[in-house]
Image (cartoon, rainbow, N blue to C red; front, top):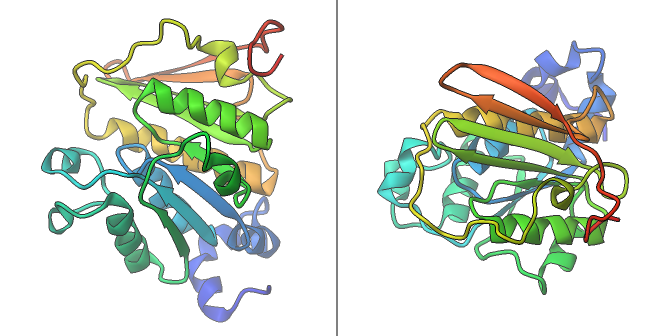
Length: 245
């Protein structure tokens, strides 16, 4: 659908980019992205995707807003305390752009609900904070053939990679489920750290949807906030990978 005058004003800075233009912006408005986790990573990812004009955002999180979340989870405010994160995210995104369709899922992804939910979306963002969820997302996206962005953060460090199922190294090619730590005491993170990594995830989603640039496939991007250094580590598909081999 052609852009209207208000949309041309809202997305004016996109329209002047040759890689996006009106056609690209129309494509973003017709796109659907699922953000799994509305916390530290999901907050900047969802907020920037909404600002970019992604037409439909799925927000999945079964938790409520707690005071300790506000140090980093910018989708939520003090007024959100005690409310569901999906509801708080919906209100925040509606305040930014009421035309964005937000589909809230106030529960966790599992093996049963994953196929039906993932089928609705063009790209998936893993903004979860535990290994069980990350391995579940890896399996579900592989089975559904959905491109997705992995990210993880801890203390002053973050990492992210993009996976194209069947075409690039997958999460299991890089990280082994056996021996992955479960639980434990939270290690930070520095409040602004997920803003850096979650924003990169949003950029990867936009690039994939528009077919522009070079994605973070077959590479793990790491970030050290203490030294302010990035490192791009090449990774390869594992011929013995239990998921994608």
